[in-house]
Length: 295
Ligand code: AMP
View 1 (cartoon, rainbow, N blue to C red):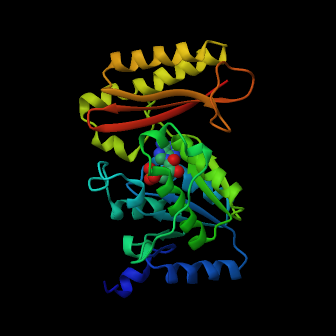
View 2 (cartoon, rainbow, N blue to C red):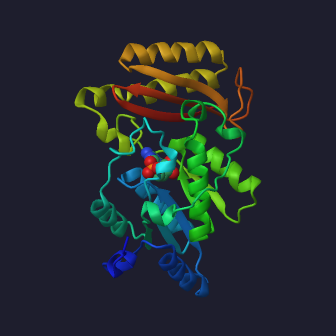
């Protein structure tokens, strides 16, 4: 495919640049490095909302320059998942990123990220074993591999990820630690709608009726977190939480788990170390995930 000059890289408004090739990206990053600038990376799949923009703002506080990648990574979707219908809105994303004073958008085509012959992957560690890893067996391999590539392409000092995808955050922290990658991973709190629903690009799939049920997920997880923090029995609490979710109208509960917030290891009862309540549910055709701190 021939790439036009405009697609290779151009300046949007005053400050926001967009790169679509690794070559162009590296040229830009090299200029910043020569000038002694620090760089934060915010990886996204686009369809940006206030949760993503919060990560960009955190990046602006922590580094001189913020690169936002927009790449709907096909290798982290199973054939049965929503890759083809995943929401895309490049013009809207660029306008929001310009407003948030991001410095560079890294938006490669799939063939730029995975040229013919690409066949190497990262095998994620123990943090990827169950919950999302059990339900979506190839997901974290795809996430770890694309993030490893993004880190190598952008060479950021730090990368910012949302706690919204808490297991992903743990998997990536483990990857960076285990592979001695020279950057820091920072987790940012989940941005929510006023009724508690975690902002997500996938919320756009919800019908009005489903949107009214969706906030119950956060309410149920928060109630469980409070009980667990007071010493309640965890297996009994998760069973009751699942019952409440199904009674509220969720079509299925993939899991409700209370785990060690650092290792994601199983726990029976709160014992003073921070815990995390994590869940994934189905609401019609949409899959929602959320998590909250406990203890
Ligand atoms: P995505 O585009 O959904 O892959 O998300 C890109 C990044 O934004 C990930 O690090 C997510 O965890 C983060 N993110 C998504 N939703 C939220 C939210 N509601 N609050 C904070 N971060 C979020």
